[in-house]
Amino acid sequence: MTTEHNHHDKVKQQFGEQANAYLTSMVHAQGADLQQLGQLLNNYPEACLLDLGCGAGHVSFLAAQAVQSVTAYDLSDEMLKVVSDTASKRGLENIVTKQGIAEKLPFIDQTFDIVTSRYSLHHWRDVGMALHEAARVLKPGGKLFLIDVVSPGNPVLDIWLQTVEALRDTSHVRDYCASELIRYLGEAGFIMDGSYSYRLHLQFDSWVKRMRTPQSLITAIREYQISASQETQQYFELCQDGSFTSDTLLIEATRKL
Image (cartoon, rainbow, N blue to C red):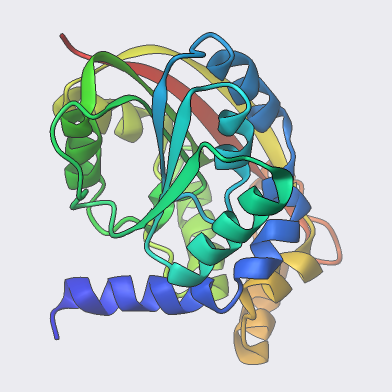
């Protein structure tokens, strides 16, 4: 089995087992970034939208109230079942689901008016390829709204963030810094329109429980946190119980004509 398949299988297993936990997670179900995205989507009532790496469907549910149609797309069948069941309960009949990987989208060229992705990109094995695919399935002039945790860019702070993320979730690939994301977007054929920055507080106990992190790795995270430099502790607002705060970014971009 290839490394690529191993990674995708790991992601599928990690998130499939915890699909319902992500539906009820307040980190995913609410936030200033989600509110801002809702306001932006209200400008496109006739749009066909692809929610790439939809997870438990919070963006899909929001988008379904603003646009014409939503395709919720994810690697995990269990996540997609949660999306489908919840959409049915909420009467959101304009949501359909489709299973697959971010790096190879099963859609013809220029299918969608909008592509969204929230808290998924840091799991993609090949970000460049996935963004090229997003550009391919977008119509010329189509919009991309991308939300994720981002690295501060400082090497010391970056190493700390990647380490705690990888210990907590073995399917984690990388939290990219803003300049890296802008470069990837440009290479994929997007023009940057603007961005919105946020700070995301993560309550430690629910953060590790949501991913069912083994106790040995929870202990390793706590020991690593305790050994963090004063600069790191201050930047991430590290609390005694292990809770901390990360940077997140909402990027708005347009596919080149």
